Image (cartoon, rainbow, N blue to C red; front, side, top):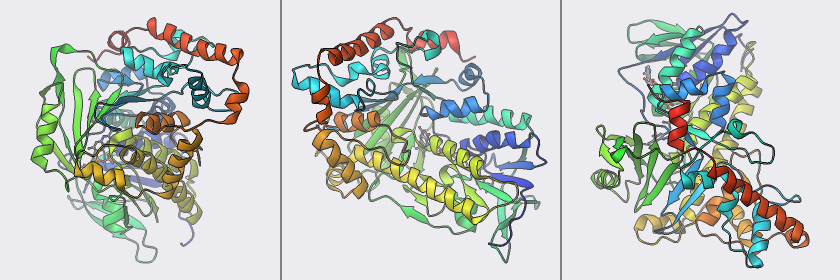
Length: 504
Ligand code: FAD
């Protein structure tokens, strides 16, 4: 790499969720710096048009940009989300919630589920879900934000949003344009590289105009216009672990005006699974499946037969290969969103990865120029993040006793990464969960999915035996009582939305 060249112009190629999130976040750079930020998008090409469920750090992304939550939710027909319900995963007929908050809280330095397991040995049959606010709120269709009941003795409500992704991109577009981001409409049809460094110097639009830049952010979707088509970065294919490679999306109007649930639902079918994302006026739905085990027509029929209302649009068929780019940052191109990689939306992690990609970019960015160290740090950290999420998704397929289809037989018996095998073994032996490298998913997340899918703890941490006694039991009972009390007095999710952020 030659001497760094100062960054005077950033070019974002693509205006889907990734492009506009990047533009909105980077618009803060314009404060006090003489820098041009240009976003190119093509209405003719359009966006992927799906991606409606988020996870809690996304709330922080919007707060950082000082976006008014009420305004944003009203504009995107958004709802609140406190977790994900998994149906038919461990075996058919099963259902559990992966909540956003924790089970109880750490007691005497050990995880709550260890203490819970100890009390079960004494014959206490209360389910662990009774000790989690988000699960109980989901169960009763209730919602309130922590600010509404702020009291130190009550647990906080951890939440994210469901939102209409197309409307969200539009919302961010107006935010970013108001702050000086320049939008160029049209197709990029050529990319020019520097003969010596291999850096991208400019992209050429279909009207013949060249847009030059110092740093390029590839948000062009699955095609990876710069990161792959121009720079040939390469792709790590994870299909052997996560074999689903197709999706069909189809929104529906909720029949009988039933209220939106405050959680996403993921229902396993014979060769994949179906999502249901409740917005204020409609549900987003889709069926993710594996083409080796199911055809498009069958996947479409299964989806249509399992909707909560009548289809509200034509089906949108999508193809993907699960995996990630070998580098997310290559030379002067940083890939965000679908151009960086893709993992199915089972845990709503794609928009999150855009969010953390932007955070890392902002953290390492220097307007003095690009260095190899920046590129390496970005790639190393992002790679770890992708791997952690990948393992957590694989767990949903591996930890199953389903044997009713070839697809499930494959998943149940497939080899998984050693990192996941170790996690499953540790949990099985005494409920141990190590959270590594700042990984996204918490102890409760891992415990919820492992227990929800039938992995039982054989024992627990011996400290739980040493601590067990009337005082601990009292504390334990208090957690359950305060959660039950709180949920009882919460408004329904529908009432909350109606008052807080009704869509116009
Ligand atoms: P896109 O939306 O594809 O945008 C690409 C942009 O690049 C467009 O503006 C396009 O016009 C532009 N472009 C492309 N080529 C050119 C060109 N030559 N010239 C000019 N412009 C060009 N994520 C979640 O977090 N939660 C979910 O619930 C979720 N569900 C999903 C379900 C499915 C089936 C799929 C496939 C994805 C899902 N995702 C989800 C992922 C989410 O949709 C994406 O991460 C998000 O929409 C970002 O997409 P993007 O902006 O990278 O790409």
